[in-house]
Image (cartoon, rainbow over all chains, first blue to last red; front, side):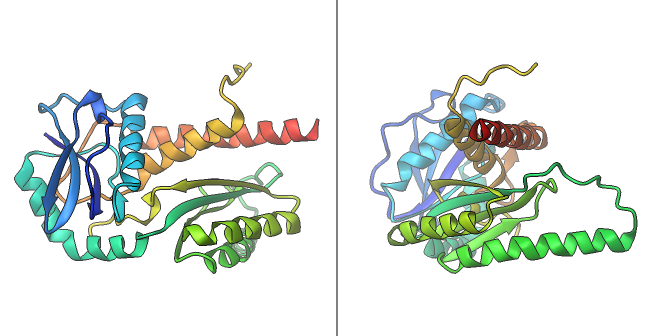
Length: 213
Length: 63
């Protein structure tokens, strides 16, 4: 089985880091893109916290060695080199587009949490429920847009719990990082009731194409 | 009673954010084989831990 860590452009050499299960890294290529892989016997790999961290370490080590990089999602393998090559070739255009977008940028994560315990999910009326949803959406937008304005690209997910007001990822040029952090501080000062959690810089996990497009 | 976390809070949040990214973001391709990872469970475990951690931070900040 072939395990995939990342798709890159202009990858120099492989880092001195071992992959999942201590496997050595392999430098592959398909459709003119660099691939970082490791090879495993079928059915040999198990998902574990250690494996997740090994995957993350490989991706992290590759960032400085490539001009642009898209991390692969954890736990994805391919039967053989042909299956991987076909998968890459079938998506080459959208992968190249995504690589051009992330080139030279880092990802910053911002989550914003409400202070109070979440209101009961069973709303008293459909109308009250819709109004609460609209207010939530509007509030999240007011936090997201000023941050997105400083980013090359931005994405946010709808809160998995009502307490999670905003869960955003921002693709920021390193030169803009200070300005971005200042804007988070401004929003924090303007909303003392909310808790802001900023993380990163990360490799651009949230800007790698995940669909079947 | 919950156990006392051994890692500093900031480091725990970073770890959770990292695990969320590695498991739920990143490129997926047609024809790949997914390892038997309990994706959904891990996500919710991570999210619950994040919320607990933030509540703990708020408590600490208030003291």
